[in-house]
Image (cartoon, rainbow, N blue to C red):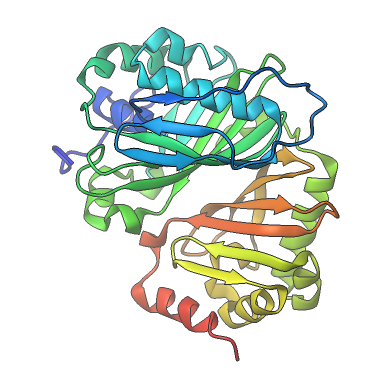
Length: 348
């Protein structure tokens, strides 16, 4: 990353210097070259799509979007959003955002954007300078219709030699505009030296992520699953926690690179990992929930060494967890902790 030794500074209006704004906006979605095939109109009553279906066509990159646990609105919105970013057109890109309320926060770097105009001005200045070989594309969408999470990848070349894989938590208004976007990713995968050169001191992180500006609009079934899971993990009630998963469920902890399949194996892992697993902190609190009956995500906070993260959930037709993905900053823990999590994944 060019000039990675210069830290971004907080500004009074946009929240960042121009330099910080550039990188922050790229983390919010990046620049993609190519075309996202947007599906035709669909009924709002359609509960889900039969993903993976929609193809993201980027020169040199082929990837399908898994939209099996979302509704039509998020698929169409994110497809159009990434397509317009690929055209490097600031007006069309910003047309996907509401002017008020407006929030974008990078949860790993601590960078806040609080105005529509600041992001628009950034795109006007920097879109023509984006490298021609930069690629960013969505791979999975969960939730809807009032909010969703999008998994997306920035390929090598956008941020130096390393790729960046992110989870964006996104709220929509009634018109389908983006009103809040918060990104979570693994700083260790990005490179600790690169991260330290850009991350704000913890004391300068936003005190809250402005979830109050959008309210809690996730579906009640999803909220019940989230509340039950968080309580069970906090209480160390392993029987209650594992009962929330389907028999063939999958748990993926991205920073530790663990992929665990089956209710029994998931329970064994949670038991062995104990409080070392950030999403199982004793005092963990839910910050915000997005999504619907098919799934979504909850942002969480805690007082441990990893103070924040996001957990995404895909639900089966019976409301059980079919897949759980945990994303948090792996750069905040030492290698011994990661090795302990790996040992916990070995069934006893």
